Length: 139
Image 1 (cartoon, rainbow, N blue to C red):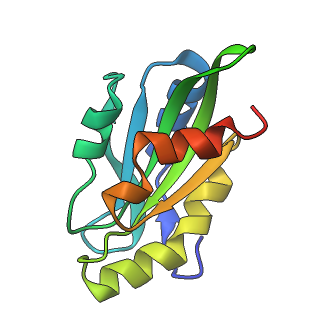
Image 2 (image 1 turned 180 degrees about the vertical axis):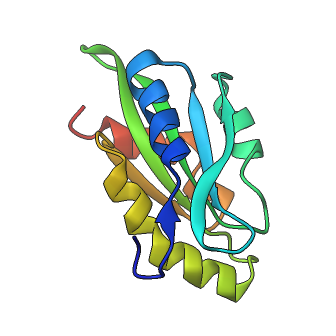
């Protein structure tokens, strides 16, 4: 349970395992339920297009996501890194931003195997090249 009193729904963990072990999803987007008491799965997709993933992040509401980020490393070939996103856009409501920020660690700790963490308040902070730069370090 997070410091905010928010729990993680079991579906979040099982869906993450499907992504991690079975490659059943390319990404998962998580959100707080309507009463702000539990983290739930908002959306999953098998769509590999990074722009489609970014399009699924709301412009005015926080979310968390895990994306199976695939990239080429010079001399090392293809790499994949499970990337955790904390999406907290500038124009989200203050209360939402605070509850999401205080609940993030609860979700992140339950997702074993995350290699990269990205925090974004605008699309330029989560664009492909920014994430590639971070994911490519030490790959």
